[in-house]
Length: 386
Image (cartoon, rainbow, N blue to C red; front, side):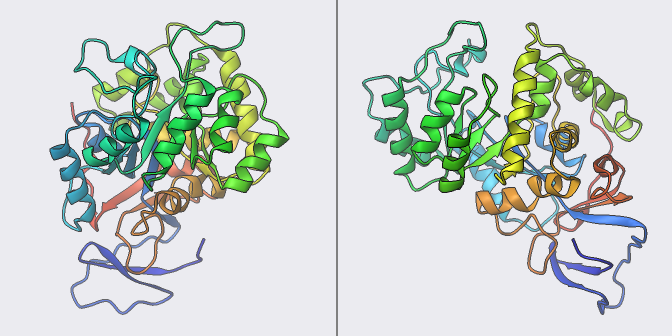
């Protein structure tokens, strides 16, 4: 955090940050006394759909990291072109894993029945060829999914890789030279993933408490954690999402779809999963493991944009300081994903910024009181779509 500063923006970029900045004649001046200027927020775990990035931007989320997408190469190329642009845009920038590696019938194919046949990785298939195809298709990083659906007292109900095959798949993913992120929710799977050098665990472990051995391995390998507590809270049947939807700072800006998503209910609540995930995030945070804020939108009870504000509040509830939570949605994901042109307010970086009333480093809820959002230096229109 910096104390009082002036920030000069030209051509979509931050060009100066100092106590006093000499601005060219005719420069628009925005008075921010008593307010806080922050970098645009980043959601480290979403699944994009048409209109999602526009919804995200309206709530100060200027970059999203998609964690499974069937987008074609033309769409991914458009996303890449927008990321390079410093011009006027109406959406959050998008990075994507493309299609993740999962066995036939494995998660998340059960959620996409009836859609175009998804590439999956059979037991006898060449994992290296599958990963090279992902890179060719435009994946910015590689996603591996390992989830048999088993939880406390519940049997497995989906195919998953064997432990040996899981390690082989991770090795093939790492051979691409890309970051490797894994969907795991069980401690046993997290242990295998970390031991084999994955870069990030997507979702907090929710079947049993994490132990010292896993924490030590995560530290040794530099593994980060994206907890997706907003989804876990919804899965538990809490009213956090409904309270978010009713917040006077949030409600007037919601589209009808966002309102509907935030007030959905899970058919089969799992409160124990959330309690375990929350405790595990707390322990990892105390141990100094890097956290990346991610929502897993658009699961029931989540919506692009506002749910990241809830995720940050839940990270604070788990024991992070407000500043640590803000880092998890700004400089930490920028550093992890190598998106070094954003995530901080510094000369040369994209002018993706939000101005809020109050000080969210003292009260994370102050982040919801947005005065202005700038994407590439342009003021964002916050009028909700119908």
